[in-house]
Amino acid sequence: MVWTWRYEKLDGSVVPAPNGTEEFPTQGDAETWIGETWKELLADGVDQVVLLEDGEKIYGPVSLHQQ
Image (cartoon, rainbow, N blue to C red; front, side, top):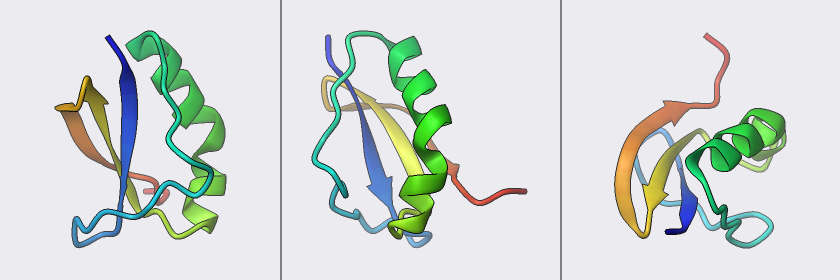
């Protein structure tokens, strides 16, 4: 299994990965990574993310904007 994030604008349109696609061996690794890098992604124009497992949506979109 491979876990990845899909990056999106607020309207749901896909944003290319700023630094290429990151792949993670576990959901926990993916979630830890997004927790550490969300501010950088937001600065690169990403508004929200969707977690994928082997290309299938697990959950999201999750906003990167502070609530």
